[in-house]
Length: 407
Image 1 (cartoon, rainbow, N blue to C red):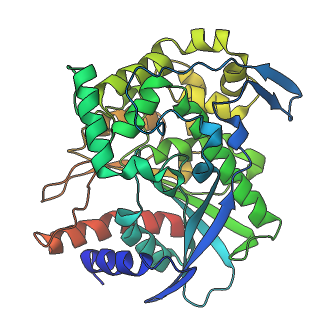
Image 2 (cartoon, rainbow, N blue to C red; image 1 turned 60 degrees about the vertical axis):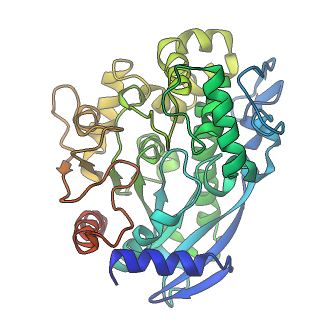
C-alpha cells in the first residue's frame, strides 16, 4: 500500500474510535491511561517530592492581560482532566498477543491529531514486527481542551492577540492557544515535558509488572521521534531510568538539536511573542528562576537525573561536556535523519548537538532532500501531486529507521 492510501484509509477507520480495529495486517488498540504525575504541574501552592522527602511552597501568579477566551486558556494545569486521563493507540502486527518489542512514536510540537503519523506507525509495525505506541505529549493531541481546537474561537483570539501585540509574527488560529499559555507561563514547557517523561516511565513499569494486556513483561523498547518529540526521546535515553533504555535504539527524524538552536516561529507551532518569552525564561534567565523557585531547581538541576539531562539540552553552551559525554556513551544506539530544507530544526544544529563541538561523537546524521515541496511541519505532503515520489521518499526514510531498529 502506498503512503497516501495508507493515510486515507487509516484516518477513516480510526475516526470510528473503536477500542480494537482490524486493518490490513494490523490490529489497532485503544488503551486508557491515568497520569500519576499531574500534581507536578503549575497550579498548586504546595508540592512534595516523595523520592527525596522534600517539600516546596510555590505561590501562584497568573498573567491575565495577554488575552483569553471563555476562561479556558489560563486554567490551572493541574485542573485540566483531559491531560490527566486520556487514551493512546497501539499498532500491533496481526495475531500478535503480547509484543516482545515495542516502539514509542513521539510527535512534534503543538500537534492536535495523529493523522500524519498513522502511515508512520503502520510502516514501522509492519517492517519491524514491533508494537508501535502512539503516546501523546502533555497538553498535545487528545490531552487538550476541545476549545483549543475550535477554529472560530481561536481565530477570534488570534485577531485579539494581534491587536494587543501589533508586531507579533505568525500568530494564527492553529498556534494561539499554546502561544498564549507559554507566553504567560513559559515554565509550562519544562513541567509538561517532565510529566510526559514520568508518564512514559509509568507505562513501561506497567508493562514490566506484567499488567499491560498488549506488551510482554520482558519486551524491549525502542523510540522513533520527530521534531520536539526528539527532546523527550533524548532525555529518556540519556537518563536511562532503571536501565529501561539500556538496549534501546533511538531514531530521530527532523529533530535532536538542543532547545536554544531551534527556530519554532511558525503559524503551526508558536508565534514570535511566545517564542521570545520561552527563550528568555528557558535560556537567558533559567538560573535566576531556579534561584527563586526551589521546586524548579530540585527537578531541573538537583538530584533528578532526568532533570539534569533536560537542563543540559536547553542551551548549547551550558553543560556541554556533560551532555556530549552522555551522547558519546550511547552513540551506537542512535541515528538521525534531517532534511536539507528544514528551517525549524536545521540540519547543522542537529549535527552540532549529536556529533559534538569537536565532531568526535560517532552518531550518524543523514541529511536528505526531496524532489518535491516539503517543510518541517509537512515532510511528506498528503497530495495527489507527486504522490509516487512522496511514497518513495517516505519509504526511504522509514526504511532506514526500520533497518536500524532491526539490527
